[in-house]
Every structure is written in C-alpha cells, then in structure tokens.
Amino acid sequence: MMSTRKLSFVVLVATLLFSWGCSQNTKPPASSAASAAEAIKPFLGRWDLTIKTATEERPSWLEVSEEQGQAKGLMTGFWGHATPTGEIQVKDGEIQFSAPEGEGFSDGTQFKGKLADGQLAGTARDPKGETLQWTGSKAPTLAREGTPEWGKPIRLFNGRNLDGWRLRNPGPGASWSVEHGEMVKTAKSSDIISTSKFEDFKLHVEFKCEGSCNSGVYLRGRYEVQIAAGPGGELPPNRSMGAVYGFIAPEPAPAATLGKWHSYDITLVGRTVTVVYDGKTIIDQREIPGITGGALDSNEGEPGPIYLQGGEHGQVAFRNIVITPAKQPA
Image (cartoon, rainbow, N blue to C red; front, side):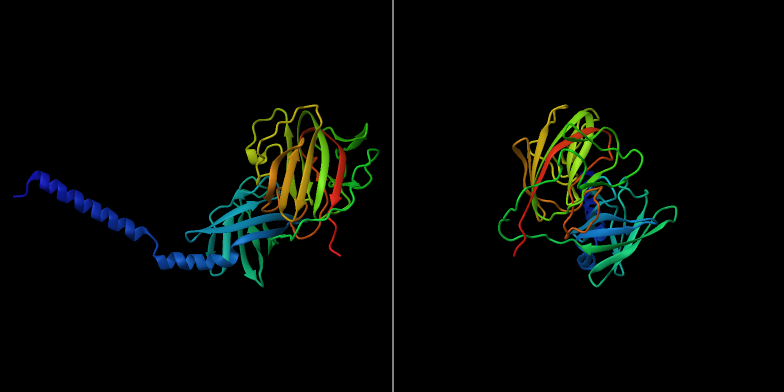
C-alpha cells in the first residue's frame, strides 16, 4: 500500500503536470502569432490623420506598433496629448480600435479603416450613432542632411499692433491687445496665429505669466512647447513647463516665476527640436513623434505658422518674438 507521503508527492506532480499542460494549451500557436504580426505589418508606423466632422476637417495622429504579435496604438485627438488607444484588431485587411477617452472624441468612439494605395480611409462611429469620415497618410520622416544655413532674423511682433497676426476664432471674447510693447491675453480667448509660415527655424520668444496661466508656443502650428505656471496642480513632466506637450519632458524641469519675464530659444529642424529656457538647454535635439493636441492641421510635411495658445485660462504676455528661418537650398 502506497504511503501517505508518497501519495501526496504523486498528486503534487500530477497537478503540476496538468497545470503546465493547460498553460501550454492557452498559448496561441507560433503560427497564429506570426499570422497576426503579418496582418498588422501594413498598418505599422505613424499616420497623420484628417477627420471630417459635419462642419470642418480636424487633425489627429496615430502611431501603430507591434509587440509579440499584438498591435498597440498611440493617438493624439483634437486636443490633449498622445494617449494609448483601446485594443487594436486587424481582420480581413481592416484595422479597428477605440479612440482614447477625453481627447476630443465621445467615449466609446470606434475607428475602422482600410488601406488603399498606401493611404488609410475609414469611419469613426460614436455610441450615439454619429459617423465621421477619416483618412490617414504615412507621416513624413522630415529627415534633413547637413547643418542649416540661417537667413536673416524676422521680428514677428512689432510691439505696436497685431499686424502679421490673425485670430483663430475671431468674435466676442477673442481678446488680444498690445500694451506697453507687449502682446497680452488676460483671460480665456482665441489662439493667435502668425500670417507667415516657416519650415526650419530658430525662434526667440519672451513671455510672462500673471497669477497663473496655461499657454503654449506652437511650432509650424503643430507642435506645442508648453507654458504653464501658478496654482492648478502638478502636471506630469511631459506636460509641464518647457515640454513638447505629451511627448518630450524637459530635463531639468524649469520653474516659472509669476510676474517675471522668461525666454524660450527654440530650434526646429525637421522633427528635431532643441529648447533653451532662460539660457539653459532643457530639450537637446530630440525627435518630435507627431502633432500635439490643438494643432492647426496634420500636414507635417508642409511649412506652418507660429501660434500662441490663447484658449486656456489665465493671463500671459509675449514680447520680442523673433524668428530666423533656415535658407532654402538654391
């Protein structure tokens, strides 16, 4: 007769073998993972999206990556910052995913799209049944060769009036004024945009927050360098003062003194950005992956304006806005 001790050992071994066998059975076959990876492959990379609403076209951005046969998505919506999408599925040549919450889409909005001639096209349907049309183009690398040759500095703000600037949303409450040689916004207002557009450049801008403020400097109208100071809670590093909003955190993190003038010296060449705050480099030649929330468009391969964010709370003033464009090749 088997002893109690030996019986317990046999039962334990049998249990472990059964558990191991079950775990092996739950793993997808290698061929299944390879098949999933192959289906995802055409959708991998960064995509500049355009979403057609009932009244306008709005920009968005999507990055699709793959890990062990599973697709992952990162998306910038109409505002906010790059945020993971819901689970991505690819079936019968169609990509499906849910938009991230709180980025300008209704919670539960489902995106579906297919590839045709290297372009994405599809629909986005929210839980109420509203359907939007959207398209996507592969984002350009914006690679540059050599070192830029710089042209002559251009003063974007003359210190007397708003010539050379336009309001994004003109109308009641869209108030920017010029006071004592400064461009000033005292409350939530409209964004203000330069009428000139630029490709690669060096930008100098000085700014001052009073009380508290939330603003930003948009490069080519697509990439926001954050301005945030005063009460209002701690922001994550990649959304704090000096960050390329939602993508790149400054190192070291700067702190703004309310009522004091600070400066940014920003160099943008292709996707590569350097940010100097009050004479100290806080972002050094880092790649910007894609557009940030609030971008004017998603046409990353085209020149764009400088715009100053005015749609958030607080008072902010700007002065000495000078841009030095790179010379275009002959």
